[in-house]
Image (cartoon, rainbow over all chains, first blue to last red; front, side, top):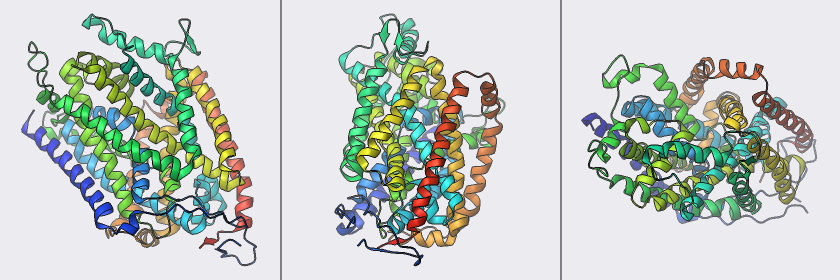
Length: 47
Length: 544
């Protein structure tokens, strides 16, 4: 494996892992718990 | 009375049923990601990268992700939530009508029901192959003989016998294709889950299936990366060289420098195509799923999270497993091939060579099955939403009706199995071409009909992160231009439209398959026409 191959592989994997971790951290940890959970609506409006 | 207000006070609005909604934020993210993650992440991406410049492929790949994939995802999430949460529309025709207020867009939106419905008809067959292989690994019924020189040939024969690749019909050499039985099983599982609805069916399943899929893939990844040099007589076939075969930037036949592939337009088209199909944009699924969000639910961060999850499975798992594993045991010649060739012919041979191969083979194909089922589930919901909101048909009846239609389609695909002619034809005209068309329509609807700036404002309602300032410019000019160039280049390629039109002129299964697609499209247009009468009576009211 060439140096360029290592750079592309490590760079690509690192970038994707970093983006994914950032997104999940922001979506699940940083946001408030009330935003994480919704109760499913169960309203019948056929009246 | 229902909590509605009408923008057209002259009309008496019909009560809008309170829609189903996602129970959790992680649920919708995993459901959308599950819809996007499929066989292409593990089988198509590595092949495309290795054949189009290796590591250099990642430059146009990430550029397409930023300029094409993510912006279109955000557009789909935004128009879906807007039409669903504000106006109570969940199917593509309804969403398009609610956004534009024009009848013509509802007719165009019927493509967003056609695509997932027709793709489901053949995708369910592929899904059953994955389950069949997983079960066969678990029960030890894959027999490739004892002579390594015949492994590849026997693997291909095994696949052909299972799928009926050699002749049409359900019976091959006196036996029913195993795919018929397993397809029935997969059908029952799919429709059971979809019957339970958005929250109890799709969301609950994806919250279990996605982590399980990641665990299976990580176990196989660790096995591949710790293989070392399995055959000391062939020291060049080792893990490092396997990774190098996938990731070393390669020149072209005429130019050996690493960036030569970047000067080839085909590399850019292949990279954009991979991103486009991998993220499932233009399928009509994201707008349907996001329509079950609430008005102030975030779409910007959720869309990016779902997209990045898809990229994780593709780059970090698919990119490190498939090609390196094939190279280690079969060398450079064995590590190239199309999606089906690599997945169902090459990898079974790889697992035969691999210590403990039966368990890793099972984990691999079970993971592919999970990837497939989370995608196929998402293909059913748009049509169910259309039947429910267009004709006020209950979910139970909608699921039954859809079950009958999709069963007929799957039977057709399984029966005309010779050379996978029916499957291949449907995949070309609907699974590729129509997706380009629908994605282009969605971008036009978002950026030009709704307005890019207004779209940005809608997207940022309740958003947990801001959109880049350049987003309106990108979605209005860059993404559609990128899309049209890609579509044009794809159309004129000799293997695509010219070859397909020629095959249609020869008649047979391809022509009949296109006839079926057109019949479904005409039926959907007629149904949209009927649904429009109902929607016009109701008006584009806001649901409080």
